[in-house]
Image 1 (tube, rainbow, N blue to C red):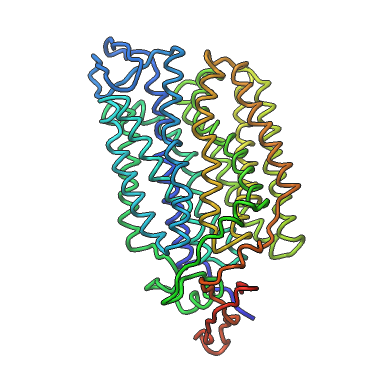
Image 2: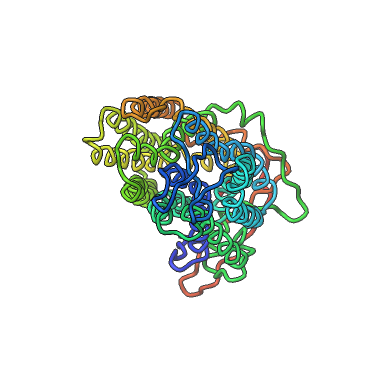
Length: 506
């Protein structure tokens, strides 16, 4: 019987923690504008009169604080804010498939992550300067930020197709992607504090700190991240033997197979994941881009309260994120149900709970604002159940060796709400009343119901036939690696090409 290598301490846990820090950095740089806009859209400072400014850039201010940009709260400016928030997602959706393709064709996740984080960090550091120069330059930088970020995310799942066993994959991937939720929970209160007390004029410090965080991560990643267990210089023999049976990697002298695009693009289960990604991301991006503004306009919270309470949904989601992945792995190990039905149950709960909460929030006014915050926390907590146990990790189930491409496709489709929802919010909430915001939440709730039904009917975790056909790719198959009771050396592992008709992964 093969023995599990300990998780703490281990190289695979270190990788998950580094990926957590990476996703945290990506999200800090993605979200910094969402709250910075709240700081920019404010009344003139009491330190002195400030000229009215209706756009980022081309602005002069009599305030002594540098980069102290101020907005008029008119309809045109609402559209302008929506455009700036959307700029990131125009770029983010354009490079997802390309990033997944590189990840699956070339074992270079480490290089991609380091390059992307480096570029994003420098863009973040330059953003306040660009904002002071012109809105066009700032828009361009946000677009470039999205383009580079889009290449990174599809490379993380393939890392764990090489660095995790199936019975702990949910836990490790959950930890790796927890940076998104952690970033959401700390960005809003941190940004609120920096807006009021930060250096360089307040809101610019949000961009500077996130950029510096990214550069520190790059230095650490050079030494701590490795693309596969057999390239890690410090991995133990026990952990290497434990991971080797699950490690998909390129064989010396062999070429990677072409991606089975026809099978992927005509696959019902793949499109089911894509639809779920779109529906879930609509609600997610609605809150990411609109929550601080909703807190200010409809619920009447001040900036300090806004920052703290805007983080509540994501703090709750972080706890559920970590627990749900572990709980799914436990259910899977106990074999209560098939993996397909486990994912359907998790996914249905994870979509319907947010749907009910969104519908309820739409009925509330500012008198019930703390109840609204609680319900919005439930939307994010429920979403994490779907992410960690539902459709999100089905890519590895369907085709582990193509999980990067599949994630790239689903992320591309899921990015559409990122640039559509801010514009839709600006259009639906011209004056920011609770009644106008209700329509925003009704749309999100309806899409969540649709996503739940689609996956319940068409979702599956069965390995797809087209993923078996790869005549030029060699997949590692091994005998079960066991650790001898009297000898800590791993038993000899052997590798062999798998016939293209029915290859399997041990």
